[in-house]
Amino acid sequence: MTTDAAAPGPADVIARLRAALGDRVDLGADGLEAARADKSGHRSTGRPLAVVRARSVEDVQRTLRIATETGTPVVPRGAGTGLAGAANTGPGEIALSLREMTRILEVRADDLLAVVEPGILNADLNAALGAQGLWWAPDPASRDISTVGGNIATGAGGLLCAKYGVVRDAVLAVDVVLADGRLVRMGHRSVKGVTGYDLTALMIGSEGTLGVVVGATLKLRRLVPGAPRTLTATFPTVRAAAAAAAAVTASGLQPATLELLDAAALAAIHDLLGLPAPAPGLAQLTVQTDGPAAASESEAIARVLAAADGTVSLAADAAEGERLLQVRRSMHPAMERLGTTLIEDVSVPRSALAEMFDEIARIEREHGVVIPTVAHAGDGNLHPNFVFDAPGDPGDAGVDVPAHIWDAADDLFRAALRLGGTLTGEHGIGVLKRRWLRDELGDDQFALQRGIKQVFDPDGILNPGKVFA
Image 1 (cartoon, rainbow, N blue to C red):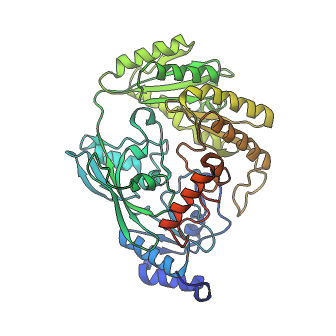
Image 2: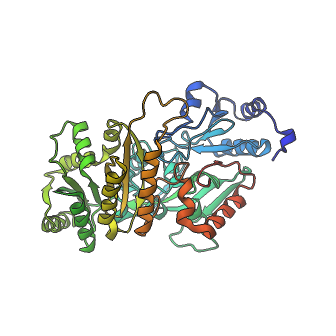
Image 3: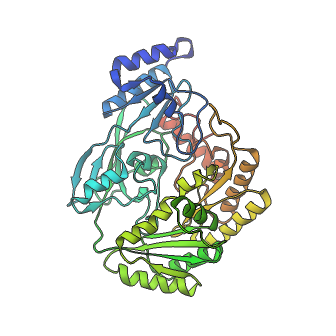
């Protein structure tokens, strides 16, 4: 790394980037502005130095070598669909976009694996794999716009986690470019492999702070035979819906999808989609089963939900089932119509889901806020949305979250921790949750994790200011 006395200025860094990467360096106002933000509604304080639109591993290596030599911070980006500000790029920083690295490099049906570049979208990957009778299980609600590399960087989850696991369960290996430009291949192609420390798992969820993922070897599944079955069940209260979801889990039945919408979320989505307004207070579970036993399992789950005082409706066919799931997938657009939202992400043990909804109701009362909430009820992951007014133009600094909203969020995070949960199940820490990280980890683990960051990134140029405050 260049010493401060000899540090080149921004023009020198840009000149070096353009000499090495040519038209891959984007200095246009639109590209620079877009790199400031993700889907959280938050922006960096200003535009980055440049956006490098990498098309190859070599492009990434050249960028990071220049960054190390000049002491310039680098922020890796995928599609910018994150919800924690982890990819937001600010003044003096290089936004390193992997979005144009979209190739499927290899598919091995016999080994149930695929090797892909990080910029490919989840939906595009599965469209290609489906022709070979294969699929990659992670299914964020944003699958049509989120990238595999972004999924890995944030440790994404989604709608199918209860049955098929999260991203860390579906990645065998990663190719990573380190801060100094070295390419390291971590992991293995075999199903089993315990040689040395599990650096692949370490990279998953590291949010670009340890290295840049430029390739991934993914664990595939064969397409599930048979037609899925989808049902909904409505309940007079969200607590009753949460208790019913826990009853499904306790029964030993294994739905592919088990999603919960509270009353405020359900009402907002119905309004967005032009559906009849639900009864006040009504909460809804959406359940999908798959595989050869889909029909019998859906009927058994329907009986469990009916016994828990749910009003159950089974989709007549696949098209109706997809419409029911579309209600769930419309959560974020519906929230955008209510006002400005702080979209949060906590997880608790599944048995504590009803208690967490009790805590959310308490926080709404005590802090005078509205918190429409959706939950991946099958795995205990909740997404509370703190709705507030952002008067006027939020301006260059992005959304300014009022202090009373942060106070309510603080209360919610601490409630999740008290119930044996965690600050984030799938969105990551980014910039939004840095201040609470030590509360969950404790001093010793916090120091260990910062030490790991120092080993991988001794000069501190990879995504500085993210995760660790």
